[in-house]
Length: 175
Image (tube, rainbow, N blue to C red; front, side, top):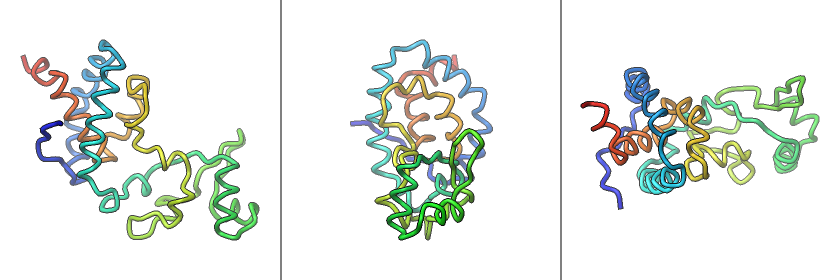
């Protein structure tokens, strides 16, 4: 079990710290690349479990307010069916389509966010379901994306900060 210091949950403080720690985070990404991936995955999964349990996503909802999630046809079919809409009606109302066939929601915050809760939770898209993706394998292969969301998500922010301590990075970088 991890002994976690008090977690930072204030998004404005997290955003300010993200700017302040930009150089440190660049060094940490390099540091992570020099370590064995499976051990990092194990540490990240454990930290994610411990930290996620202490953060109520419905007090934040920042991912639903600011993330562009790709949507596939099967997901759009499922949600349009749930909403009793034709795919044409659903697409027209909620989606933006790129010339390459990619589909994303056409507004931020998400149409389906109400009081920081997803009103279509059982039918949410896989990108929503997976976020913040700290439970997935190959953390080292997702560093760019993870650090892109570092200022957006209190779970990612706190997992990364605890990982720095756990791996001895902070001690190493202050010498």
